[in-house]
Image (tube, one colour):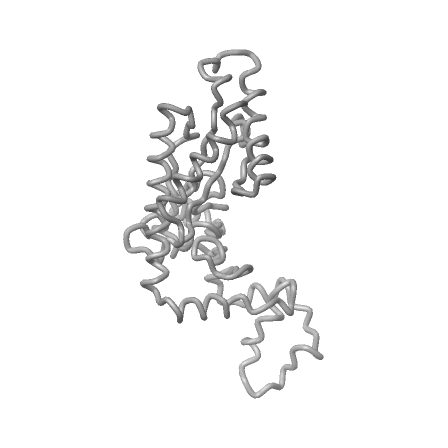
Length: 256
């Protein structure tokens, strides 16, 4: 069964403990996509979002996302102790992985991956961890949550005079919103409203890139037309940065 911890768009966390109960009952493999949200485990305040992760059979995690490790830094963790990855991927190339070495050949992890000679991603994480420690990584996670709360507050505040609207209350550090220009305000029920709103974000994105002021992504999702998606995770962000961001969105889109 596939579970997510911190979805890419709105940052939702699946109830892992309850899902694990179902998997145990029906003897299902439980995989958790924690690429984005797995790093909350460093935070004492927010690690409850990952409750039940210890019951998963496999977990995917990207320290290059929330912890801001150097790209690329990814991990695939297995509870399995029967060399499952080797059974799946091993080419048993004797010229690469000789079996008569002086150490335990099970330590040759290259023969357990599709790429074989993949770069040593874990070194980036290890060096960063040694540099800032567990407390430093926890601080990065906690700051990201604070920045997200600030961003949500500012978007809600802007809503009253510039009509920047949240797409929903995020559980994580993803803040999604539309900018609704003056020409569309109060016209939500009109036939072509969604079509016109969908064109707003791409135009603002084009303007910000051509003027060189920002580069912020947008996307649609289901029945939600193009909206801006901001992930406020950098430990270098400040209140001033977020004020500038929303003011710039308004400036670039006020004439649409």
